[in-house]
Image 1 (cartoon, rainbow, N blue to C red):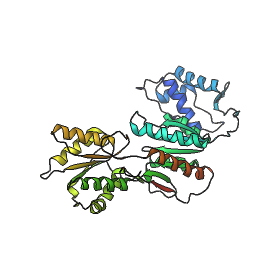
Image 2: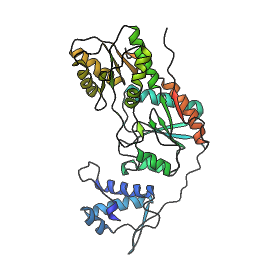
Image 3: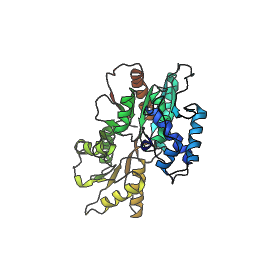
Image 4: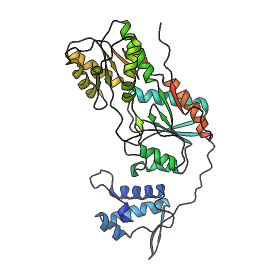
Length: 358
């Protein structure tokens, strides 16, 4: 059993805390059932290369919480204390990010979802798995909430992975992807209309007399996953959007960023500006992409239009800002069906753009 446990001696987290958390995680995952005998303090200490006193401290912490009990002369055994929590009568949703920041995307999405949930009398809870996956021992709290069905559904925002979808499916937990898209059957999604944004942006630039707009595109999805990225969708929609706007389609006017963030977008924009016939306008995949593109233009002393499907409505190139309130309303309507155990008639919702300003 000790081979299933691990600790990180370089971590600032005390080793006994890591060890007790690792055991809790195995209990939460169902790996250690009630009655399972843990290794002796000496045996586990040898296998992990730590002091037996550290193992004793971890076991003592678990015993104090009632997760294990010690039988004199026989060892330490897993036990589950009786669940004295009252049955839930509320509807609780868990919104999972990989990371969270003060960027407009995060706070506008949270604010919109909180308002939509409040209007429905639902509770919204937030968590981040910090790119470690829902089955990582550092995310034992999230795993426990899902396995013990202390939440009614999961909203996944940000790059959750296929392994996370596997875990949610195994737990029979309803899941809804927010502003993401998966090719897996049965995975429900609500996302913004990236194709409509691109058509609107190119039409706007054509009306301004621009004939060579370029796309500073986001990175594609990781190979081998079921997901598509905004970069995938924009690249696929670009030829038809150019035709609709009466603009020539030039595949050389697409610069794909090698990552997310301003620096990647600035590098991609520089490649476009070095072309023998450079672009006369730019379309960016997101706020950080637009900032990086403008930084590259400023370094060259250029002042070209930069349009963006903006998270922040105050962005000067917002064409338009993303309709977060409409996304949240659509998500709540779809979640109502999932929580009730019904199969949605439309499992994939594309939120329309707000009308153009006159």
